[in-house]
Every structure is written in structure tokens, then in C-alpha cells.
Length: 197
Image (cartoon, rainbow, N blue to C red; front, side):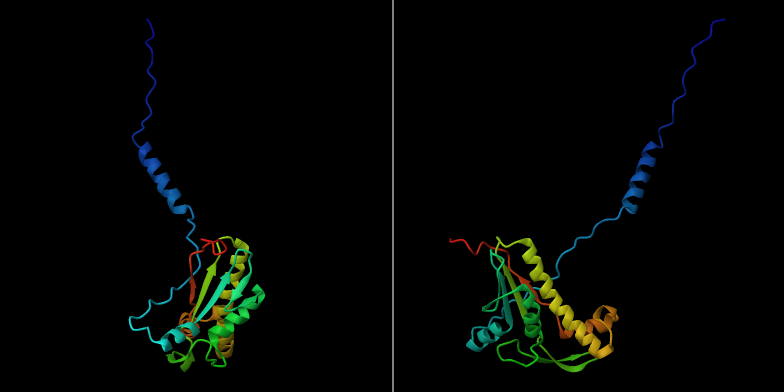
């Protein structure tokens, strides 16, 4: 009696696609995705139609602090060349305008929760321009100092009112402080200012 060849049983592959699909979903869900990080910036409002009066032009100029970083990493704040470590103090003075200086942002009365009626410089804008040739490290240093100016003003106000840092306040308290010190940094696209056209 001759032995017949035994056939090898086939593996059932009908569920392979299902398993691959489940593995794909598992890895998509469990993999952490990096969220986009960036710098929070608020653009200045568009100019109004009837803003051709000389008083309006002067008013607009006093509400803007121009910060310029050139291709040699030299920093100009307003009309003065300064060091990066001086920028924070200049920005804080501009944002708060504690002496109500006529050359700095105008103050308006605003009703803010927890604080009542306070005078704020709500129309101020810090305009940052950089030369395309400036170094990234210098650019980051300028950004850090500008943001630190807002953070310090907010911390000072939070400590004065609640004896806490701004980060330790609840959401409503933080919102109230942001109404007094709104972060307004406008950034122009980098250009090669040092080159002749």
C-alpha cells in the first residue's frame, strides 16, 4: 500500500488585515504627537478710515515702541542703541507708562474685574523688526526680554493684589491681569535692511 502525500494545512489569513488595522490604530492612539509651538503674537488693529488728522498720527506714534535688531546683532529701541539686558526695563516702562508720560502710550480708564476702574495702556504695541542677517540667538534673546517684561509686570501686579505669582492665579484672575497688561508684540517679516536696493 503506497503512502499518499499529505497536504500541508493552509494558514487562515482572513483576519490578518483586521489585526494590521488594529495595530495601526493602537500605535496612532498611543504615539504622542508634538503640538506646534510658536510665539504668541497679536497683530495691531487695522487703521481707521478717518485717521489722517495730525493729532491721530502723533497719538499713533506714541503708542508704538519700535525695536530693531540689525544684521550685526545691534539692538535699537526707539531712537537709542541699547544692550539686550536694558530692553526689559525699557519695555516695562513703555507698557505700564507709570508716570503718564506724554511721549509714551496713552492711558484709558477701563473697568476690570477684581480691580475696578483702572488706567491702562490698551492701545500700546511693541513693533519688532529684524534684519535677515541677524543671528537666531540674538533674535531669541530679544523675544525673551520682551515676553519677560510682560511676565514681570503681571507678576508684580498679582503679588501686589493677591500675594501670588501670575502663574499661580486662577483663570479669572489671570484674565483680569491680562486686561491690564495685554501682550501686544507685532512682528514684521525679516528683511535685508543692510543691503542697498
